[in-house]
Each structure stands twice: as C-alpha cells, then as structure tokens.
Amino acid sequence: MSNYEDLIKQREILDQQIQTIKENEKIAAVQTIKALIEKHHITASDLFSKKPGNTSKKVPAKYRNPASGETWTGRGKAPVWIAGKQRDSFLI
Image 1 (cartoon, rainbow, N blue to C red):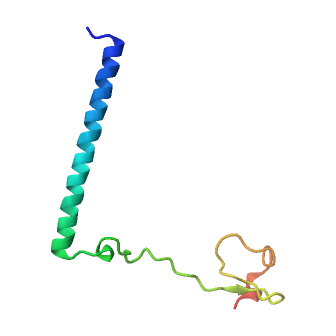
Image 2: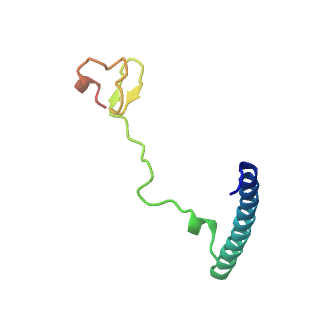
C-alpha cells in the first residue's frame, strides 16, 4: 500500500502529464482551425458577427418637463419632476 508521500508524487507526475497532453491538444486544435480558416477564407466577422435581434434600440422620449426641457421615456423610475403628477400634461 502506498503512503501519502508516494501518492503526492504520483499526483504531481500525473498533473505534469495532463498539462503536457492538454498543451499538445491545444496546439493541434489551433493548427486545425488555422488550416480551416485559410482553406475556406473565413474572416473574424464570419465567426463573431452580431446576431439580429440582439441590438438594443433607443426608446424615444415620451414626456418632457416644460420648465427644464428634461425628457423621460416612461420606462424605469419616474423622475422627481413627474412623480406623483398627472402624466398626460407632460406628453410630448
């Protein structure tokens, strides 16, 4: 039966082997990817393009403070100048 020190040494050896194999597989994967990119003329925009529908659209202002000209879209917490008041009078 192995003692604690022997098991620790075995683990260190295994960790080194794992790291070596992991690096070799990474190198091989990168080479394969580079070959495919070159073969098919793939660009970064082909791989990392924006998906339609993920763009956030700016919401137009719905309310305006007549005193300062400050606007609010009607989303989120209401500003102090409109909170608790009839909003119809502030519509744009």
